[in-house]
Amino acid sequence: MESHEQPAVGKLLEVMRQFRRNQLHKVSFEGYNASMIRVLFILGRGSVNKPDGMTVSEISNVMEVTPPTVTPLIKSLEADGLVLRVNDQNDRRVVRVTLTDKGQELRRQAMEINMKRMRGISEHLGAEKTEQLADLLQEVLDYLNGGKEQEPDHSCGR
Image (tube, rainbow, N blue to C red; front, side, top):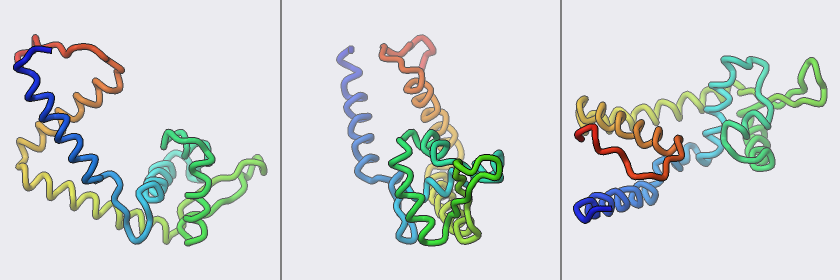
């Protein structure tokens, strides 16, 4: 790495540490932790393609965790009346999880708060910087998802 890149890398590391400390991604809502809210989001999105519900394995695959990690989340959400576990019509061994009306409402409220936060960031940055930020974050995701552990290509003139 060239010496003139060191300050930029250090700044990037510090900002990433601050994001982690801020824990925007771990915000709880109405006493439910981020993982529980995430299950509600996943079930809401999943209901489009799977109106009969999703299995614990399907939920765990989306969350990239093991089914034993998801099971207690489902049990807690079920105890609070946010989800319902039902046996599959075709295979009684399969249990499907669906949102209840109460779960759908909590999901809607959490989505509204998340959108309000994103609108606030966008208003703070302005439309142009928001577009730039989204583009840059997408580039970072593409880089990380590609598993590239190499020096970036600086030939694009940025």
